[in-house]
Image (cartoon, rainbow, N blue to C red; front, side, top):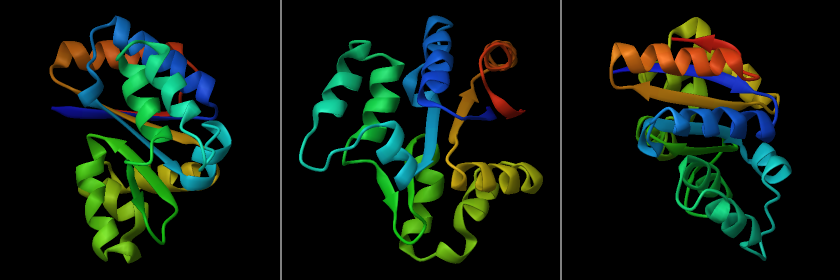
Length: 163
């Protein structure tokens, strides 16, 4: 399996990519999103007294990728890495979970490198996420799927595409 990564500057752009990935048969368990907690609040309209956005995202595609990925980001149950201001959902959550147990010094950079992202790309993504971007990582199950994912991300408003 290989991982294709890209950043998005807006939730709308990320949703467009997710819709196209879903139409191409990519499953929600192949997709990860990483945002800062402040980006999560700004782009996902988090109100700590309400779960309205979670319900709206969850109902958006009746259990599809957008509901699973964006609904998880909006939910309280995603991995929030203390000290790093990061919210992680999807397949990368396991790779980055160690950050919450004391490996804060490595930050997102160390977690991404540990997940197989090159150091150069990880540094770029760390900066982009800190500046408010949404990091999308998709695990391709085959070379054909990798090509499809890359083509979709090239057609959408993706930045810093790497495979």
